[in-house]
Image (cartoon, rainbow, N blue to C red; front, top):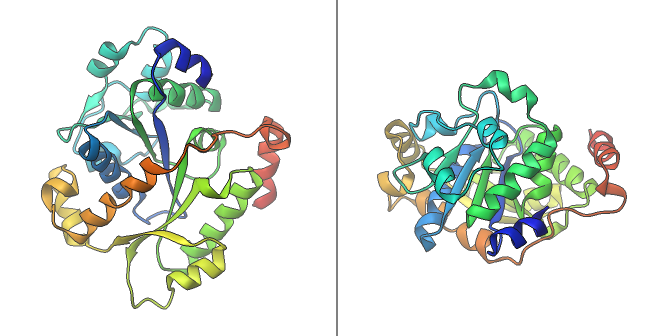
Length: 279
């Protein structure tokens, strides 16, 4: 499908980045929304932030936005949406990024399947330089579909035992799903240098090095959330703002990783077995 999309649009497909929390409460939505803004600012590129928590997503609340054209709306009208109609339909944040969520149309969320997510992300890649995916929880079919399609997974954790253990489990599952190591990046949020759970401990436990340290600045973050703006607009000099800006080269500069692998893990039954086997 991606090859067909490339032929139809005549432009290189955008990159998809999934921000995946090792457990709830690690700050994935804050990283995803501010990373989307950082990508837009750094190159004046078209960026779409999509919230795939189809029932209780936080992105719209974080950015003080009202729900507009929903994920199910885009899926239902995907064959007739061109660039102009898409731009006029999606929610647009003052920072310059486009946002898409399921909003209040929860009853329609049940009809959204894994193939819909694959089709949606391929479509968005046609029209945006970067697609940042938030709202991934657990490992249901729609989440795995998004992870399959992305170029990079930012696995977000904090310096506590449950988060590190969950990160270890996630990495094990990603290996079973046949994701190459270079597709996964460990991101430690709210980093504390004096924590007993150091980056060395995290590396030794998970088997992967920490690639990104995100500063802990709750005061700056909560101010931006309460105003519905990004950190760069509320606290441009904050260590937190600068550390999220530092993720941009990682997302942008790494050669594209094949989103999906064929063979044993390529089929649906194989992928389900991979997930079930690690749980």
